[in-house]
Picture 1 (cartoon, one colour):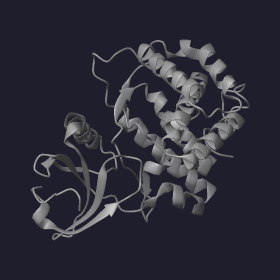
Picture 2 (cartoon, rainbow, N blue to C red):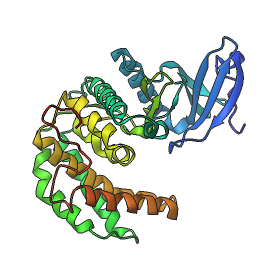
Picture 3 (cartoon, rainbow, N blue to C red):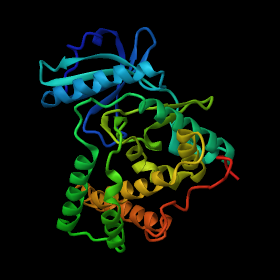
Picture 4 (cartoon, rainbow, N blue to C red):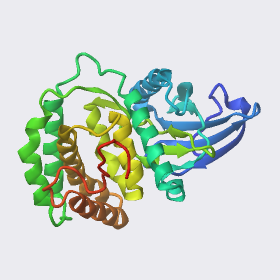
Length: 307
């Protein structure tokens, strides 16, 4: 093991340590079993990220008080003779939501989506700091950064101008948006389904504050797996069909996110470039070349359910 963890206080209780390779986080992750039979997740980061990781751990301690099914905080500190930061959390048992959703019925997928929407609403019940920068200013800066990054990259997408036009026509929607805590990467890749169908959320390492509706910017990953789950997630969050303004803003957030995804993917190689390009094309299809703010995956129903 390249990182020494024997100075972690709980280390003497560890009976099994296995690396975990899933996810995009730069953290080194390990599955842990203890003499008491507990199953834990150990995350190791560079000491340079101490302040960021301490803020993340403190936020997790706040979020878990909301009763959210998630990895619970166990310990935090430095290890490896002060060269690294560790975070110890409970292990969430179950299977990746994206892997098991297709094995469920349409109704079961929808109900899991409802649960995901309810959990997200609970996360958003934690308010943003009172001195938080205005959302309109902050997100417009992010839009500009994504556009500039895309313009500078070598890979170009067909239809991207339609997204850029939509963005410019709808920036005004960012004005006076409320802000709350955000998970930061809320989609099926960070959800676990237990053997009895319970849904839990993992990986809060991108936790942030912002417009709660922006948290839906990765729902495309959910929709690509199950339109029933994605529809349920929206309806569960709003306790029924969402307002029209939600769809207009979501299209703006997804368009901006898509523009930034290609420059991001380039550093990971052709496989990721192809993945993000396919997703961009799928998004244009969902939004009928940005002419319809309600995506085609959403199953509209006057009762707020599925037909």
